[in-house]
Image (cartoon, rainbow over all chains, first blue to last red; front, side, top):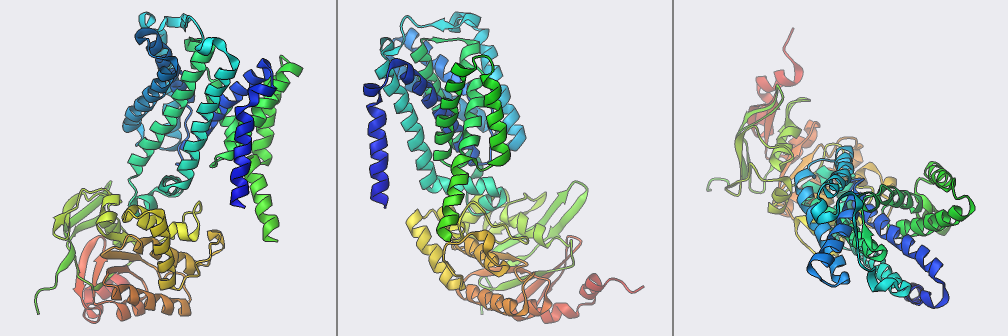
Amino acid sequence: MNRWKYLLYLAIFIVLLTLPLYTGVYLLNVVDIILIYLSLALSWDMLLRSGQISFGMAGLFGVGGYAAVLLHLNTGVHPLFSILLGGLAAGILAWLIGTAVLQLRGMYFAIVTLALAEIFRVIVRNLPDLTGGPEGTVLPSAIFSGNSTKTYWLVLAVAVISIIASEAFRRTRIHFALTSIRNDEVVAKSSGIDVFKYLVFIFGITSAIQGLTGGAYAHIYGFVSPDGSFSVDFTLLPIAMALLGGMHSTWGPVVGAVVLGGVSEFLKLKIPYGHLMVYGLIIVVAILFFPRGIVGTLGQRFKNTHRG
Amino acid sequence: MGFPVAVLKTENLSRNFGGLAALTRVSVEFRENEILGIIGPNGAGKTTLINVIAGIYLPTDGKIFFDGKDISQLPPHKRCRLGISRTFQLVRPLPGLSLIENIMLGSLFGRGLGQKEARLKAEELCDFMGLDRVTRDISRMTSLEIKKMEIGRALAPEPTLLFLDEVMAGLNSDETREMIELVKRIHNRGITVGIVEHVMRVIRELTDRVVVLDWGELLAEGPYEEVSGDPRVITAYLGEEA
């Protein structure tokens, strides 16, 4: 049983790896975007497992993007390396901020993260010498000179890193720590868990993933700007995807990102000016009728039929 | 016969909540391998005493010594790792984890065990407590089973001092009997037990000594037989005569 599962994963992975062989540039670009959102949705869910809701993804996504682009331009490091540094920068920044604000919980923490994205955007806009100000900064050339196959592999790598991180968190003691913190902090503390340390750690790691994703995105499109890099889309769409797919799991956000990402692209072609309304409708219906999300609902069905 | 060794000692421990003095200058001693009863009317400060000793609340004043070390300002997770464990008056199972995983939590973080060892330890504790260890949805467990699970979670870090906060509440008489025997066997493992209980029959049978709290103050201390005859204790429980 287990061996088949791994063979299946391997097969899916090989298909994904060789995807550029069978598809055109257009579809590959669509998949790129889906994978970007998939990584963000996963990182949001990973923090949610500790009970903390973040509305600050766009902020750390933008910080990662700016850090990667500016480091590449000003120090000449390889774009790939600068993307890693972008992730690192977002992670360290979140770690510092987390140390200050993670005494807050629930809605209070959520509001602080919401403010973060806006603060970063304002800072970036007002440092024209460093960041290019309101116009942003354009790279002389996009990464891999815009080669869509290599670009795809880059975002695939980011998505795989996110999936591996998420699964690692589900299989190690971190899973126990986050679940108990979410369920009952007093029990967590009384059982020997350093709640604050775990929250700062998970906030740092998930923010690093968001920064990494932002770095990749910035290099693929070859520019950063206050309104583009910190767009609220990078906060709201991943949350919608994770909710639709199913919270507190790896495959929920993955499925949600693939479904919503695919649907949104399809709708964009069919109803260019109204697709966001349909998109919103799907999310509302999903949350009303499938609060556990696609994966959660199917998982429950599966469990019930097997119980007899 | 030497002096009994105190595992944990509080000195003039006080805790206020705003204007309410939940504990006032309470000095008690938990002696090595004894069962100490903590009794008193509702609102006397019994659970607050446990919460302050376990570190959920910091004391407003006074000190706590564990193994001779001042732990008054330590955070709760560190006190757990040192060997102070507790259950909760209202059961607090973690629904995101299975029965075994709930118990594993204590050894994973309170003892620093790996997952494999923690699972073995949890299974051993299930057997010790007579708890069916088949992995089940914890929402389907009986109240006795959930209480045992909580005790298991508290035993998993291998504490030297264990607080049981009203573990008998809500159990029928057979279950109470079983729980009394379990407390005795926990005690036989060499663990010092502090037990908060309203059922005096249980206190009489289990404890070596009791402390009586009333309005946050220490009212009396001694073997149950002595203390239960103390007129101040009787007044505290039954009220002044009109």
